[in-house]
Length: 160
Image 1 (spheres, rainbow, N blue to C red):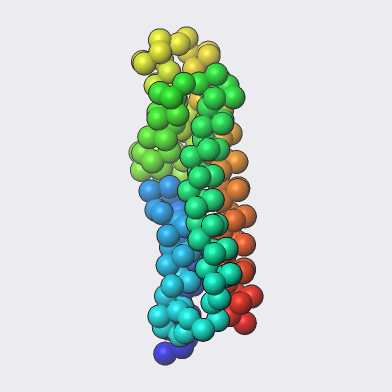
Image 2 (cartoon, helix red, strand yellow; image 1 turned 60 degrees about the vertical axis):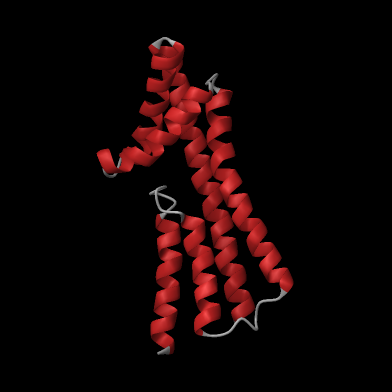
């Protein structure tokens, strides 16, 4: 049974990392869920108040990093709130409309459409803002991957 439990925990962690590429999946919740699953299936004895404090702070940091990185990317290139919203919608819809490349094309097109339709920006300016949204998304994925790796690594360090 122990092997099956570890496989379930590993699946939770893997789904968490898949969520980096498919933002519709709440990646951090799967990472945190894997930790909780370990506690329920094995024991919570390994986890001190310091462990829980660090993990919860990292969960909060992940939620904030996702939004802030996208916002900075769009704002840096002159985008508006509409561009941020368009980019966010593109991130969520893109992978389903264009599998594989939609994760990059989605925020780009979403930001462009929002800036052109809402703020009547020219296509060149809107394209620069779209590029900024892609940069923001990529930096968000890298940042979240590092934080999630730290969460899983810290969990494994405490357990073993």
